[in-house]
Length: 183
Image (cartoon, rainbow, N blue to C red):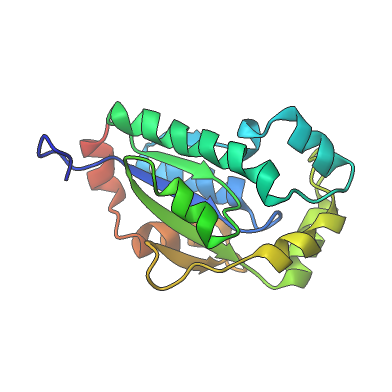
């Protein structure tokens, strides 16, 4: 509860490697709940985009400013009483710890899949700056959501609609109630 007795705004971070369908899932969750959605790629500084486009993986020093920008966006929306959905790879626990610093009820949806399926998806998309060659570095960095972290793991081998349903239910949210109680 917030200090004024009102429930804290919720921020759902849809996480996982490139190619698991974070954007599709986040948009579906946001639509189901009637909440705004943000794409983490939009928070990257141009230097990060250039680095990834050239096939060079990001390191922690590249990621910290990006993660702080996402955390600050979550906190800014929460300060207005707005619950949100945002995509973010959030590959390491320490990245998720930083996101949880936002003054919101931050919860995670960890999208998982067999690496072969992820590679196939990345190879089939166009217009994204993340090349398929960087998937291995993301998988190496990935620290799956742990039992003591607030969130749910969902396999993306299900349909997008089923992924959204499992995520919303797994987080204990009721779309009808959330639409009525959130601005």
